[in-house]
Image (cartoon, rainbow, N blue to C red; front, side, top):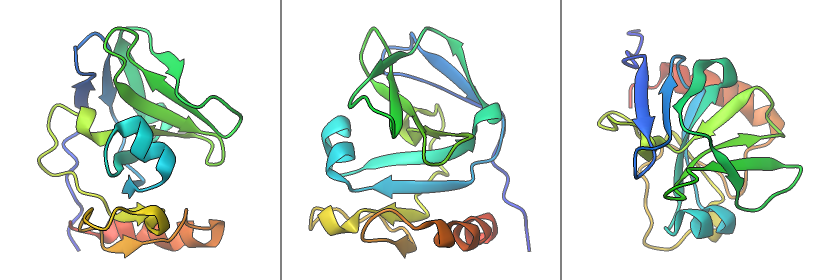
Length: 154
């Protein structure tokens, strides 16, 4: 089996470039989320994300602004200038940052491995993700999913 080259470190930014970041660790998984919250925050049919270990993600310039739906489950961070949604910190999965993968400078080899909340998916919104879940995967699903993602050559 060949190990995937994630071309680390990777860099990225918000729409205006004021908020920049670097990724220095391989993602645990890539995903498309079709939940109504992501649809509304992304102004799209779904949001795209890379779940990166928290120690492998860092803001390199700018000061992210906490926004979106504020609560104990997840914290969403935006550029204070252009208000682009850049990353989230889910509290149910501690130790990870969910980076909006379209914010990377190079997105040529990023595709979603899983899609979540397909129960609220727009009929036209295909992602090509090989694994789908009607809601968010359960805790018992994560171990096998992370292993399958590590072996995926997508």
